[in-house]
Length: 186
Image 1 (cartoon, one colour):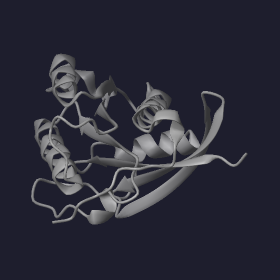
Image 2 (spheres, rainbow, N blue to C red):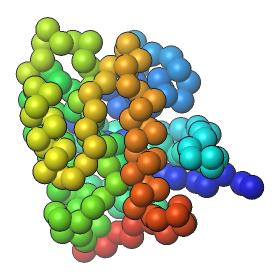
Image 3 (cartoon, rainbow, N blue to C red):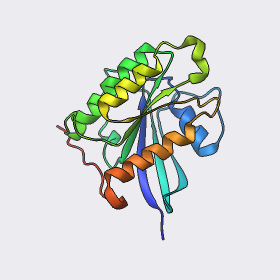
Image 4 (cartoon, rainbow, N blue to C red):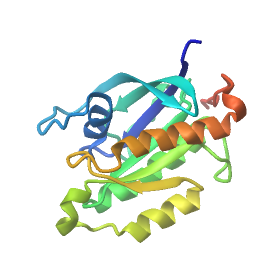
């Protein structure tokens, strides 16, 4: 039986560790000096609930509150990993704007359930923390989303992030059908 393909967009403000998380998950290595992403797609095969999956991870360029939201960030995308850095208030504020842009682009209300995992990254920088774990949890709860803190550098909870988003996608699409969210570009 061929694997089911699931496309996941990894989004967040620049320099929050999106590429580091993706590369750590796919290649199990931490790249200390990584050139800022334009946009890259990585693939990894995983087994979840007895089923083989091919996860396509779209490592997006860093977004800010003013950047145009690309239609490509929601067409054929099954779920989202939204990343902020625990040592950056700006990245935490921008992730809220990105979430709103996803909902707007998809044409769904804030009460709609979109498969996503909110990630507070860079826990290895705990001495520089400005966003508390509780703040991250509260935001995720307000979105009805899963929350996790991680460190790509120390490989903490990285695999969990991508298995959690896969679980959320599969919950959304009951029985793992090939249905996906559609975008409404207005």
